Amino acid sequence: MHELSDVVPPAMSDLLQRAAEATRQAKRVLAFSHIDADGISALAIVALALERESKEHEWENVHQINSESIQDIRKRVLDYGPDLVIFSDFGTGQRNLIEEHIVPIDSVNTIIILDHHLPSEDDSLEENRSEKIIEVNPWHHGLSGSYDLSGAGAAFFYSLALSPSNLDLAELAVVGASGDLQDYYGKGFSGLNKSIIEIGTDAGILRVTRDLTFFGINTRPLPYLLQYATDPYLPGITGMEEACYAFFDEVGVDMRGDDGEWRFWTDLDQSEKQRVLQSLIQVVLDSYDDPRVATGIIGDVIVLTGRPERTEMRSAKEFSTLLNACGRNRKPEVGVRICMGDEEAISEGSGLLQLHRTNLAMALRRVEDDGYVERPGMYLVDDPETPDTIIGIVIGMAQGSRIIPIDKPVIGVSRNTTGETQFIKISGRAHKSLVDIGVNLKDAFVAASATLNEDDEELMAEAGGHPMAAGAFVQEEKLKEFLDIVSEHFASIVSGRNRMQKE
Image (cartoon, rainbow, N blue to C red; front, side, top):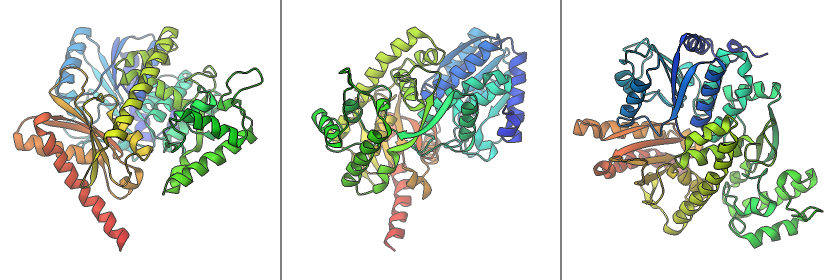
């Protein structure tokens, strides 16, 4: 049995126990969460935990908390009249908005924030903070919210503080962390994420294996497993059906079984897998200047033992993609219901996954065809067709497949925004090697936003996120200025590294 106090830092354990007690005392709860896989998983954990406590509650996914959406959240709270409000997978970077618009509502006794995003530089746990708010965030306890714990992980520990019977929710915490790419792209989880995996493994709901990390090992017939491979992109194979057939012929692996049906990766014996893996690694080594690209081909694959075989829910990585498909197609509530075992939602989710794959493939092809703009310190993708819900995924895939080099951050701009808004969505991605030399997308975006807001003495931009992945909303008239500021900032860091390398 894993005691919460033995797993998380003492101060975090105290906050989680306070949050659990506030939940037990609550009569009506309203929960909000983000729309990505981590946010969807977190919300499902919270909703299931509340359900098991027999609490009257409602829940809702929100695309982002900003100066516009906080008004909708406030109205929702006023209409429902909860005495407890929970925010998961966001809230830390928007605490000032929560303080201003949600704390003053009379019916609200307690607000719980279960987040993992970086706090603002001026964020203080001691000064000018409402006693109504209980905030759980790994950054406040000497841990990384980028690698050690996700939003779903914070929600899981909250559920565990409520009841030890919530151990089974560890699988959803791992799904959320996988969707947030906290496993270093298959290289393994660390910190509290690793502890959650140990909890799930001990409970028999998870199994960790070293295997091919490609999406589709449970669901795609062998040739299509490679045809749609993008992480990494396989030159001469990805997108080429005949080349995929030829690949398996050359390595001597039958694509069909004795019954004539397609075989899946999970059908192969160890010697067959070994031949395929060796050949795939050779393809990558022959195609890329950086041999490290091949390291992500084999990694930890987390199997969810209680989920049906040959479905997207069988592995944490594929499950997270299914949830992302729901959120990125503006139906995150379907993803929450999938996590909760709703058969109708599972069926709808499969259709959304197909649409998601199509949208990503089309957007990635546009990047290939139309290219990107190289600017000082960064690469820029300005695609009016790609929705704001997937622009971050697309630019991440473009760098992962080396369509865009990884020696500078890549910034994506989307004018195809969710709902009516006067803001343009900005997404940024940076390879870990850039973070190691000082690139911090979140800090850069926040600083640029602050500069614009101060100059105009009104809200022109808002930002948040992580060092490796961050986002911002910018007024269209200020887009060029925002991009100029971050370009100059990144250029000073990247050029400094280049000078050091030459020396």
